Image 1 (tube, protein in one colour):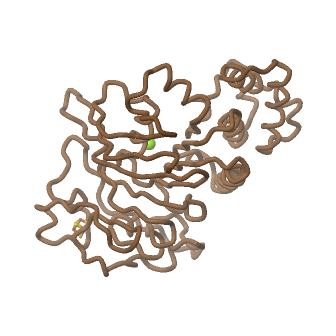
Image 2 (cartoon, protein in one colour; image 1 turned 30 degrees about the horizontal axis):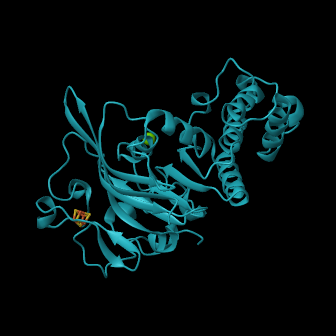
Length: 331
Ligand code: SF4
Ligand code: MG
């Protein structure tokens, strides 16, 4: 049984301007200890997907199921969900200060979190906090444990947040653009750290990013989202080597500094559509260099283009590997 199985998840928000269709019929499964990358430009619905699982999309209409360890996160009571959210599913966000309170010492915050969910003494929790901080590479953790968040560098704050996410030994970590605010070197270090610890703790990971480069070495599975839909889903290798959907190809081509060739990044022309006014037919058709007549009219559904590999596009299944090889993962 998968650790998490999301089936036909849809999320809509009523707004003054109309109905925002943020997520439309997304399904995926995540095995224990595995990494799922969810990729798409901002406004593709990727964050809303996971926020919904955590009960953080208030005022939204949600349909579908999200079975986690045999329980549906979408129908769970608030109290039960809060318990799951603390102890079994933890989160790492782009901005560490969304999780770290600026007015409390870093160590104290980890201690409080441990003690909110486990019956352990303050001393034991503090020892665990020091252990976790040194595990994530905070030098002199024994003394830094009493620092305030502002005394940490950006990279260190992100490490502290990872320590916090690991504190209760969760089955799943959801990381939403965890490294976007960091420079490239620190970004690579933080990703390395997360995946090393993930293996060590045997934690499943959902990594949300707009940059396919970030997860090129770590994702077991990749889900590409566009305008609230999953448009391509595949294990890592076929996704990077044999991409089928032109949007995925566009993302591969726009990986910054791809393959270190100094090649210029080639952004996808145009911008993602408003989720209030999603284009007819294939939502990507106004930006797609392969668009045909039917694409503006008929909406392609996810269909298998190879084993374990689905794509929502009218191009023939055999037409895979449209992306230039230089942009592909070192898989
Ligand atoms: Fe492009 Fe048509 Fe495929 Fe959409 S269905 S991605 S417009 S080729
Ligand atoms: Mg987001």
